[in-house]
Length: 227
Image (spheres, rainbow, N blue to C red):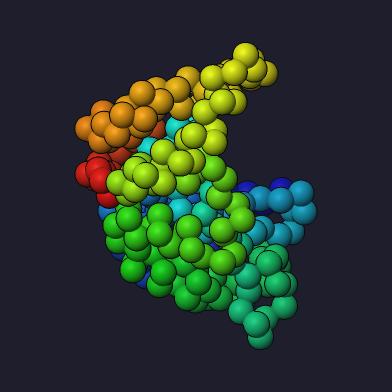
């Protein structure tokens, strides 16, 4: 199995070259400052112990479905080896070239974009328009994003489609789904009334609940809504 020490060694030159990155969480590093949308790099284990995979993620902390600050969110993609190296999306520990290539590829594919996404608004707009990610964004994501961006008319249209299900007699099978249902129902009255102050207060509370007490909290700047 890929070990923590191997992953730490892979990250070491990247962290040295980029002092605005901070390791926090299992196999993750984050770009500072951490705002309402986290910008994260993940080195992950797979079933093959000889290889790991690398990915980038935009993680909104104010979403009703966010259960942990370590969630991967719905914006992200794999990072593959440079074209002139073998492996594709697999980073093989036996290949000594992965260390230098890791720094190059993470910078070229993720960090160069992350540094331009220096506000929550830019992160959400990027995620919603990035052609490789658009299909992964469901109605729930767009609902919260539209509220955060003060696009209330669109949020009301989305909620009108979703509302019958969340106010039906359907009983969620799992506690996490019930939590999502309860959170969404909190949005109902203020959203239909167009009460921005209440809606933004709810998002601020969800964001704080996600980050508070986590290793990311020292680097966190709470979102100012609308983003």
